Length: 140
Image 1 (cartoon, rainbow, N blue to C red):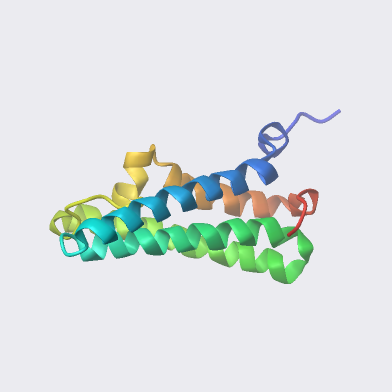
Image 2: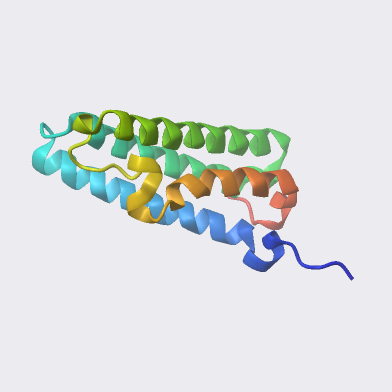
């Protein structure tokens, strides 16, 4: 009998989409309030928060559809890859030019305000997609 892998123990096919849903709500709520109440204070940061929310929604849908075929699987990998580029890019920019980020985005400092979960999600998503276990998740 083989030892359980991390995907078996965590049921990543169910946990990852839930994480994406939570972060879509968090980034969407945060950016909505920021843009509605004081958009001129940090327009770049607030716009990037709104973009992050859209990426999390796309990631949620892509991960849920990943088991419906090779094209959907590749699409999910692309979304996770783009998310990783966003987290690294915004994280680096927020450290290199803190003046551009008077308020944090969900990806500022690589997601430090959220326990670095925003940096871990795309990596975990890509690892899970690599396992080929996407067929275990009900598709939408």
